[in-house]
Figure 1: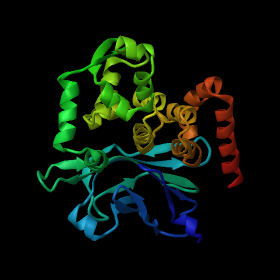
Figure 2: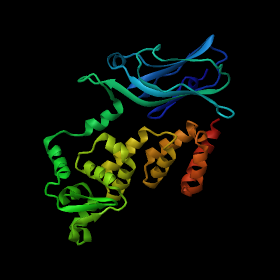
Figure 3: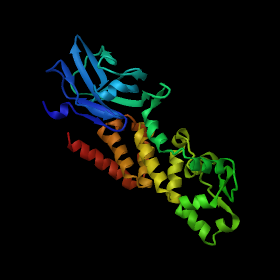
Figure 4: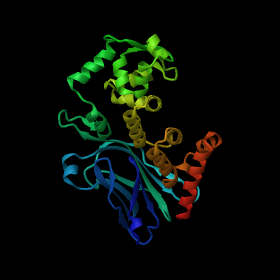
Length: 328
């Protein structure tokens, strides 16, 4: 049997195992695959019924910090009309060994099929409080400094301490500080260094952002943004980062948008990846659509996409599809 029979393809939160034929065996275990901090396995067993298991590989990490997983698992017939069997969503289930999650299927499976696991969240118990904490929030939290200087900078914005410029969003205004904006953005620096209207009138018009998104943008600049606020306004922050040349914010949005691609957002993210030249996001979206077969799950949305998307982007999508077909 080929090595590919045991390989699981992954994105940051999706794992997909293609089963070519189970007729000749009663048990198969996948190669380890990495999602989050852990290596995982899928296994399938025929014993009167059919049983699918998902579990982390045994290790010191698993023993000391077992994952608390939320996920959706499906079995998809990979031929014909791609009928799918979907297990009810699993929420915050601790997985330590290969008996913690077992899915017994009553429907026999023959021929080619796909086991598809979409991880919605992975948590571990916090050493301080014991409360579960998402590992996908940790990286963001760790990057936020709690130094006194940064906290004071945030207060300057939130309490409007000695603000000297007004930013007009589409539906409101916020006071800010020229020096902070100029330090963070070369575009703002240029505005205040030359005899432009922003310098003379002490105002900046950002009419393409709502007041909430503009507040999130300033909170990022001042080092005071919250994780939920960042997630809510990622696309608006991406546009602002590109417009005002904040490369660190643009990269933060780029990395974050890669983490939770799904059928509801993949086409929008693909278009933004093309518009703002985000190569990893574009590759991730194309891989999700083509290699993982999600293009079949959003046919109506994809047809609408074909009618309005950039011609070059459509050509790239079809190029990926053709290359995928050549591999079969």
